[in-house]
Image 1 (cartoon, one colour):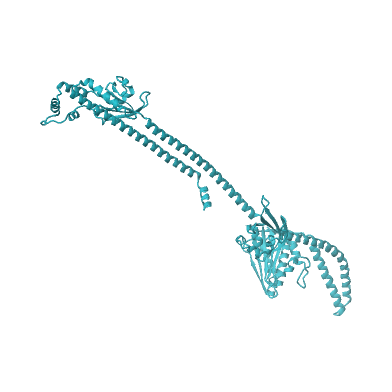
Image 2 (tube, rainbow, N blue to C red; image 1 turned 135 degrees about the vertical axis):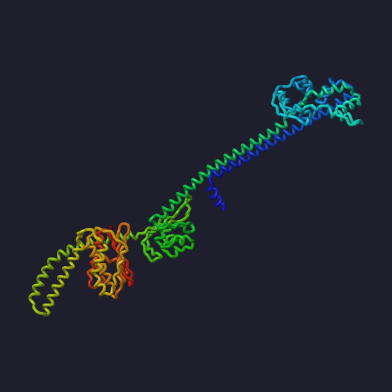
Length: 609
């Protein structure tokens, strides 16, 4: 399961991983900014609520002191600023308050919790901030706020208009029994009831007509500290994301390198497998426990055992091929790092190969034995070439000797034949002496023919090459022997599936080859049978196969069929197959023979086209 996961991760595109990391970073960044904005809004609301509460406290306390002063008959023009000043100084004692001030419409500070700043003019920025208040409102529920960074006024400012003294004032004075009247009449009666004359009322109205602003400035230390923590968290998170992104980038690069390495490794492994499969040498490798771990295609061709059977772990190949088992079980030179042996390998299909076995011990870097490698080289073709070479040398020597012997025999034979003819002429009629003379002449002629055939085989052939249609040539050869085949009870069958190309060859010599092959096949079927002649076109050759259903040839005689003077027929000279092989070879072709006793013989002639 772990290997499957690794392969799955290796197969994922690195850009998918990069997009996932980017999306994750975007999501985390959005959440971080939302947290920052939420904390900022929360702290702003807290400071604003605190400032509004102070403003309402100052307004309420100031109104109460004004009401008390009005009842006591004090002068409102001197009472008003002093009462507000005391209230501001009292309210400034709350934690986090920098100052509180009462400012008129001209920007003059009438009262301030910091006494030395009274009667001063506020800055231009503060005046613009105060002028942004709703001019039609006289309620502390309408307020404005800002965060200022001026050199002397750094902090959180909240401002609201000082409330007018009207209906609320009358409510503070208390109710008295009176009929239903309008607001002005009610106010006059209330003032008269409480001993306020018209001049006091005029002072109060004059005070209400003016626009006074209560300005509160709060310390932003807690606010800034909270924002600094949020910024620090964002910075730390950004660094973490940067490190994660860097790690992801390095991972992507590593993954790309891994995929490249895996791709190169797969190409190397594929090339290795193709190379091992294409080698014309059988390879069988075992581990240190004797289990087969390598079995190439040429080994299958040599043994006839499939790769699945060889690698199934049941040692089936060693049971079927004990010759191979000996290479691993220590029965021959196992202690040597390299050993070789030549064996005759019989395949599961009954074929035979002469194979040279080369066993090599596999040693690792620590000089430990980790397995064995058996190389199998097919020597069948080499053995055949060696045999053909020896045969050629033998036939060449025989040809030279035959040519010399024939040359030496022909002159005495000519003399013997002349004397035999003279002796034959001395006798007349049919008597024993005449028959003896006739036999002498016939035997000399037969001996002369044998010498002529031997000389024809020994001397180089002079081929008269011309364009030849091989199918027509085969039809002629078959028609010439049809009568002989019918007499022997043999059916001649031709199988020419396609038109063959014209070849350059000696027509008479090739006709001699096929007539000889057809005649041998007919003579091998004493009790009748079938002689089949088929043709096929390969890449560069034309293949002619002559198959009979005759008596076949013994296995021990297969290697001698093409030897001169080897024959199994009582009246044969033993030069027919030898001459046929010589003619085919002089055309640049090959002739091969396969035979099974009592089942028939198949002769294959391949001629280049």
